[in-house]
Structure formats: C-alpha cells, structure tokens
Length: 256
Image (tube, rainbow, N blue to C red; front, top):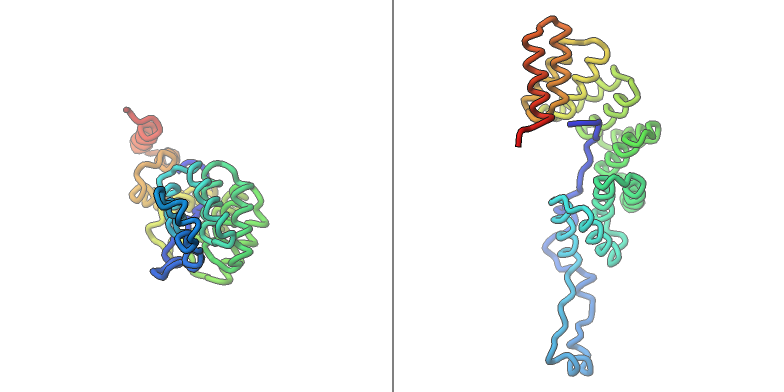
C-alpha cells in the first residue's frame, strides 16, 4: 500500500451491453449480398469482423490481466469504431493512469465526462487522479460534485479523504475516511489512511486501532506495520515495536 494511491475503478461491462444484437454490427452489409464480391471470394472467404462487444471484452480482459500496453491498443480500436463508447473511454483513462501517464488518463476521463457528466464512478476517478497529481482544488470540486449526486458513496468519501491527507488537513481527512469506513467497514485503504492521519496529529490509540484493523484486512502492507512499530515505540513497548518493525522488513524484502 505504498504511496497514496486513490481508488479508481474500471467500469464494468454489465450495464452497457445486454443480450440484444449490436445495431452497428447488424447494420453492416454482408459481402455475400454483393454478387460480384461473392464470386471473387468464394474460394477464400473473408474473416468476419469481430463485434464491438467482443472487442470491448477483449480490451477488458487485457486490462484486467495487467497487459496495459496491449489494452491501450484494444480500447483505441473500440473507440475508432464508436467514439462515444463511454466505458471504453473511462477504462482507457484507467489504463493510461496505470501506465504512469496521468495527463492522457485525464484527457480520456474528461472525454467520458462529456458523454455522461453525472456518472459517480467517473467523477470519483477524475477527482482521485487530480488529487494524485497535486491539483487539489479541482479534485475537491469533482469529488464534492459526486457527493451531491450520491452522498453515500464510500469510494468518493475515501478519495476526498486522501485529498485532505495530501494537503495535510488531517482532521478533515479523518472525517471523510471515517464516513468511507462506515459505508464500507472492510475498506483496508481507508482504515490505513485513517490511522496515518491520526498518527500525524498524535491520536495514538485511534491510529493503532485503525492500522491494526487495516493489517487484518490487508496483511501484506509493510508501511502499516512500520507505522504501528513507531506507535508502539511511543507507548514505550519496545518488544512489540521490534516485532512490528521486523514484520515490515520481511514484507518489504520477501525471501524468494
């Protein structure tokens, strides 16, 4: 859980496609309807053009597998056929962000927002990315817009909390992160940054409670164990602190 990565989502395909045939593919004329072409290709039939839904699912498969460079090309192929494909736009933004290209990611997210300006997940994605690149005022605007549309979205509250955390506004961060945890109690990232925020303002007990819960949910986070070690040092419990530091080192440098 190194760094302050906000939570961004690849928007799923479920609400975009259904079992109905795709109009744009159904409308394409088949070469068999043209007698002169059919005669020329009878011995070597043409390869059917894949449907848009099939192309999109392949792009999703590549991005889900972490094959981001290939996913970029696959999403671009979808968008060449349908520039208004909302989920392909959002997911291409996610892939660019994963490749460390935030400006390209933001460009795709903005294009998707033009298509669906009130999509909560997309507004959350935009706010999260703006926060990561230090454009805090814009990030807060996007996230507050999302909360006006959906006040009980845990991811949006978490991303707003991370904006406050990066700005050093730890009490405000704690308020947003607590709300995220109320809505999604098993949110390890929100618990981690709640603990970190509490640590920064000297609320040791709150920090320990949040970080220990975070490590239960995500036991492979060296940073959480390291911060817990610091906190137990403050409580003058050197044996417990040493145990936690050792665990953090083990997770940072795993033995092959």
